[in-house]
Image 1: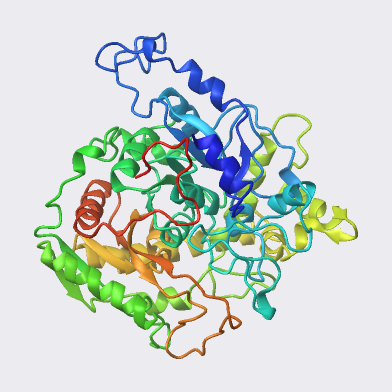
Image 2: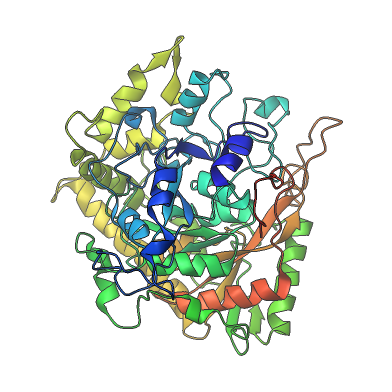
Length: 548
């Protein structure tokens, strides 16, 4: 069923471009999971000591992995032409966990290149040079290829200023492919990664559930990094129930990832999060709703459209009806400092910005690349930059459509211990944690169980703090190009182009290892509202079983 849907809707029809690679071994892997390998109550009776006597929680479930998660049977490209031929020596830690749980790795999902940490000039979400190259090799237009498409409006942007092949409705990113594929029912669930917003953004844009776990809940071993300070992998699913099931498989201690030692503390990590799916979870919950920085910008101008404000106000009403105590306009005390001390962009690097992501990218990517098998195309970030500069087709630098300003800025830093850049990184990291965590969110969480944010707009502070978030569908709004914030003029589509409504979600964020509470809140909200619906562009095929 799923391979037929991928062929019909990802590679043909609306051509969603959610898969970077389809696993040619998926069918044989599924056939190997024979029903007679289970006893009468569904428990595995095979030889795997980690599975013996326990139900395989993802038995036969097709999963799409973001293409920065290692698989020994498929390339891991991070969306880059520089890593196009890179096949890791072994699976990522979480890939092995998924296979042991009975999951079928259906393929690798497209993503914004290097998890949206290469360009400093505004790379559209869902774009990558590796996808651009693959589509060209299938006969596509090299000048316009490289984008994934949202199944709720899978058309290119016809406006002259944006008419370079990008979608009319943004896919969100950087975990674009898993979000698209799960929404369009091309896979049952997906695994994305997030440093700041990369699960929450495509989840809200594709009307699915996304969980960004606490840093340390899920192993990062074998994942192309931005920085170990903030990176995590997490579930993307059509329901909170499916996301909770997947999180239980992903969570756990990995001896190769020091952050996951936190899972050895009782009460931090669980193998079954479905026990927290409680219909009355919101009863008595205390939820803060900050406006400054989330409903408004740093100048306190309203940045939510009228329809986005309506969705948020409707969500608040639902929370109150479900018994939650909601305090609207409860601000994060350090919000202005979060604005003032944002992440550094390209060169030159200003004095008052956080170098945490730039420093971590060079440090951790170099460490990842150094472990690739002999014959790997690149070994350092400097190699990636040089490859992109030199790789051309028909005179076009395929890897440089949107430049590589962030990569160049990161590579300019000296990551050796004791260097001036290393000292600044340590200072910036301490300041990040002080602003986002100690004097920011932790102050709020003294009195509240969770914070409610519009869509993925609240990703930054929890990301810096390493705290968890879960986004759940909350409705539809007008395409932001048609209905922008009140202080900005619209950039209308041409006459005759009927822009489709855009999905919109709400995000619950909480303190470290509060996933049980957040899953309960999201489940109760989901059951009270049931905003999830399948996109019309990918209807059932004759071979399909019931969809949702």
